Length: 261
Image (cartoon, rainbow, N blue to C red; front, top):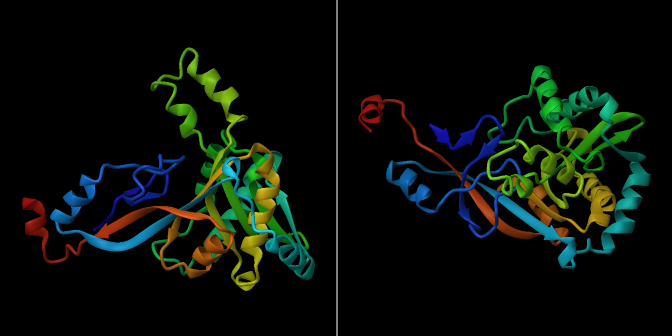
């Protein structure tokens, strides 16, 4: 038994550190005693997921030394980075999904995404995304990496008091364009191009695309043992602000005890 896990949003874990940081879009929140309850039931930590952030309105700036270095990487490998195309949303999302499946195939806890799921994701994302914050890296027209920055609709929803009608829906629709809070929901690189600085290049292009908004940016659900991504976060001077914990408990041979509980 392993969890908690929301299958709808790919939302994993209980907060164990960083209770003062509000939950961003498609992430959860819990009181501290939830962890005490699951541990009392016999579940134990299996993995922590780390959350980093930066805030351009409070003075964050990407370290200058990265700019020329990352531009050299783009030139060396002839990488171009473009925003997702709304008119070709399904096709672009399928490209991203293929990259998701290839780039995360060895990651802990990952299951492949199907084309049908890709179409559902495309339909959901189309409602809320800022296209300039969903980027695809390509070489000679072939996708080799992606980054997905989602606008934090939570900051709008919490002011609707649970009601979309009659006025809430208009507040939501008009407010979407003004959001300056983002969650870096996913980033992946084709295996043959990993460890070549492409993640940093995607962060640079994302920074260039959304920096006029002076945004708050949160990168979360980074596996604690994903050393490449954690090193990238530290090099970019993001702050570690929250941890989620996934628990597990072996239940084979303990069905009777489980039923009694």
